[in-house]
Length: 502
Ligand code: FRU
Image 1 (cartoon, helix red, strand yellow):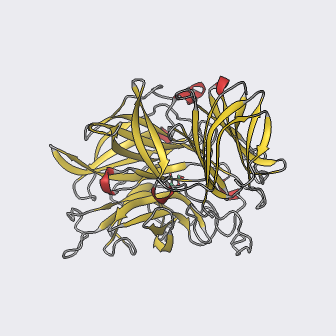
Image 2: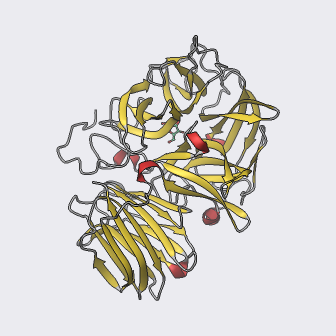
Image 3: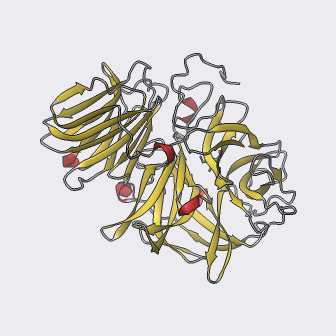
């Protein structure tokens, strides 16, 4: 067991993000809203704080902000690890797992078979069901229910597809090494029939994992629905390592057709910036959405880590937080479509909420200006600015002396950057000290950025959440200053509001 000891100064444990008490986690699994409760299951090593013994951990929340950890929901055994998957509420008991008036929750997960299983080396899809609202689970004796004999067939996301022609279950899963999302259909969650496949397309610099498929109204118009296919890949992200891309198009119950494919077949590494990314930062992976959220809202969570250095981040006894829960919407932009993501639930800025620190209309002069009264390590910073002569300008968070994480705009290069080279502990892995960039253009001549700082992370939502960058940082506990900075000239701050959460 690796150093799973309680530390007295767990300065990196997030206040606004979920992390397991004293174990490892990776992908969010089985996200569902059921009987008024949000359930977050996740890839968990119940016995250690590095990857292994993969099982489904479990936490619940009613406000998407505070989470209660529960006992392991679905545990690995000597034959199989329980890899990623999803949960559906089988309200009409199509699976037959229900009893009397109790309809089951059904988990569809990947069995990663180990020796001594006869299926050793195979990944296939299996079921478990819960009759007590998601707290205890029974594996289906007929597992696996879908086996292609493949070593890399995983991460089933099941949705209920409803149309005039009938309704049925649709599974999106991956053939990870082939850069393919495969779609299956079922009436009972047990017998699955192949529908079609999608890919390779756009980014293929790493295995495809953890797909999701959901409809969204364009610009809020319920008469104009488009389908979004998300797929995570590792490595091959826009700033290296793990990342998630998405395609916008149509799904007719059989086939997904993308309107946003730039490269069919294998990727052109020079075109990464043209693809659609769920997040441009280094630490937003395996993102999937909740089922059955009321009012048609689409909420997603990503794992806030990167396989490049995931097992080495300097936290103890826990390792890896989840991202904030994000509400996702779809917008038409110059003949194409773009997702926008904003922090969901209690974190969303609320009317009448007064910030603890504000600043209005001031020049951001060359150099760095510490903002007295704005310091913090768990805070939301809302920043709007217009460019001037500066080559780069923006905010430095979690700063003190030479330490700090820069979030900057480079107007001439049309880039937003997060620079964590001086963010604190970086030497635990050679690829951690990074400067990461995403394309950005001014809207109405300006830039709008909301940053959530939470002890070991910055989550940046720019231009109404159309660009997001999520990054882990490991600063000294005393590095709490917020500064404005500009280099090579000046810019103009139009507003700044800081809300402290802890
Ligand atoms: C993604 C992933 C999945 C797999 C799981 C195993 O991070 O590799 O494809 O199901 O993690 O923990």
